[in-house]
Length: 284
Image (cartoon, rainbow, N blue to C red):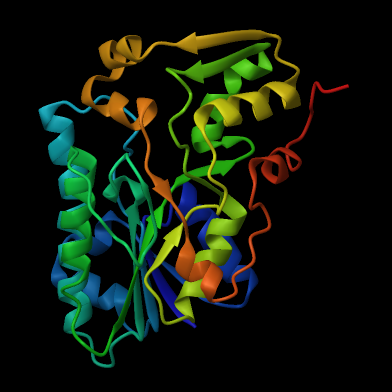
């Protein structure tokens, strides 16, 4: 199948493209040039049986007013253009998979796709607007919204930054460490997205484990034999990241219920399984 991917050159998009290509699909990257006009976007989408929307500016930095606008425009604006083009296609793609984030949910309680209660933060509002834009796809095109947790890969993305102090022998816990850390292995994510392409569902994309930041820190400390344990206070993170520090000092509990109910099997359902995939370890 010919599958169009916005954000194809990003961290997730690169892995998804490689996975789909390995399965015999043809991945069509939707770069900036494709979004210059509706005509160019329509031309890029021609003949595609599915569209995966991963576009969006990185969320893991300080949110100034200007950067909040960039976060909004890169998600809602891009999705709006994509949906408008999809709605004019004939023949239309069979499925539209659009990314979102577990930041949609409140920080208190535990949620799945059957109990989608929205939080009150900027990130929750951003996800709601992002998903609303995706929902404007015309009836007849199956929509699947995937709410991602933090995507982990051994030497890329968030984990490369998170693991740095552990590799230096310093185990870092954030604030109390009691906050939930919703995550998913990159291999499981691309497999889940491929599964969603052929399954009639709106799905989450997190590992099923209810992992706290403190439990993550303990697992990483064991793996890298980090002996010095440090807790970074919430006030220090607020000074550094401002409003965006809320993602670090608190976190929603999200269970990928629909994936589990549909029979999807995670290769890394727990952080120990992810750690076992890493390269050099300092453990004895």
